[in-house]
Length: 453
Image (cartoon, rainbow, N blue to C red):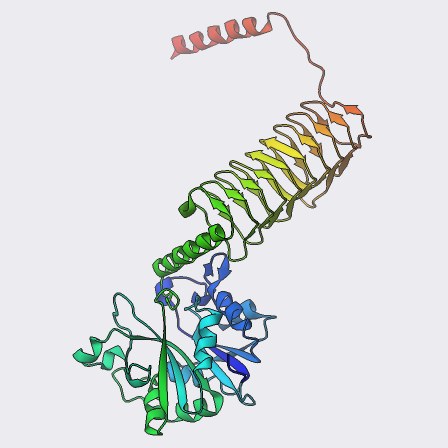
């Protein structure tokens, strides 16, 4: 990679009307993260000295999204084309003297490796490096005519291209690398004598050629420079991203029984020899240690799962869940802000929220922690080796000592000491013959009502 300092200009001023959304286009999520932040993460790996996002409408949304990332905001209003958009970043980069990457906020999958390759091709002769690609359908992309060494002979927007130029297969992604000392003088000379009367960024290639400098194109795959302008395109890019991540997971030693049915977030971390059954969805903030199994139809977000643990089927782990090694969370169990110690089990039909559950504790079917009084959340503590009988309600704040047993059907409101047995349920009363008399009376009443009708 070039030894020059790097800055990035990310264009995001488009209105995104095809999204039909109140959310700025570049903030729509891809694998659980706004697409703009995907791109910034790749840029950050280059350790840039400056990042500028150029926005138009909905500026405040973008400002909020990039707060704390060291990213400056520039505004393009009115909007007169891509060259005009890049010019809006000049003030923010007035003191910068290095290499500038020009990227697009709705093209989120371009990799750090590709960005580095673009920067590497900049030298004293190559004024501009353009990232090109060869799509199956070139559609309305700008075309690039280049020689065998990648020198650009001509670049032209589709609207202004001749039939012969439209027949070219190499297309302009719009992404460029330019040295700052070349960029601003070139932009100042760009005109708008074209079909759209806009200031086109690609025109800097022709201007540099007039100056006796050449520009080069390097190529990447269409998938890496896929743009997102509609919800359908967002879904297509999501599918492509997921396909790549599934393959990466399997290559790293994760078994996916039905890969196409498993959906990862951008930050999902999974260890070796983990098995993921069909129809599992991962939200943000999930890590799974080696040897664990996630059974089918489970939804996991913001959770840490220990080695050898079993989750599901039909389990929901919400943020703040921590499962120790060899724990078991079974079908229709929901856990939130709770920690299960090694070997603890909650095998069926339970809700465990705001809880600390000790090692080897057993939570019976139908148990719930009553953690919310309508105003505040409270904590339940269950000691190591405790046994909670089925259909128990633990009314927090409450502590159940190590080794204690809670009888089935209990409503626990007070502390239980270690190794004690606690039951809290009404006394059973049986009235002989009552049910038969009830049925007879109700049947007679029903017949009377029918006779009156």
